[in-house]
Image (cartoon, rainbow, N blue to C red; front, side, top):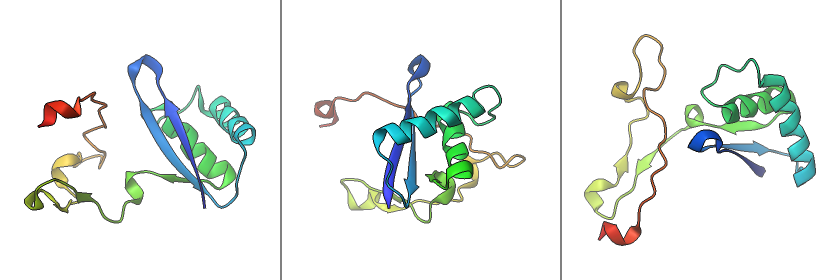
Length: 118
């Protein structure tokens, strides 16, 4: 398996997408696929971000697997304390809208100085 990543940094919104494929593409080949996908979805995508739209297009058109939260089998919260390390509930109803089933939260990039954590 080969792993590929997309990054979006427009307007200080940093979104990443991880993709997996059985074939290895060199940088130029992968860039060409991304540019083609971008062209196809740029004016019509409905996903929250362009990165997600491109990832879904690459999945449909070229057999990539977009590794997003919907594919998670298990998640574990990890902490320095044993009590803070536990299986996270993937079906947490408080994090989804009951009518649409959509997530009510997005990832937020926070710049933290590790020295402030002590």
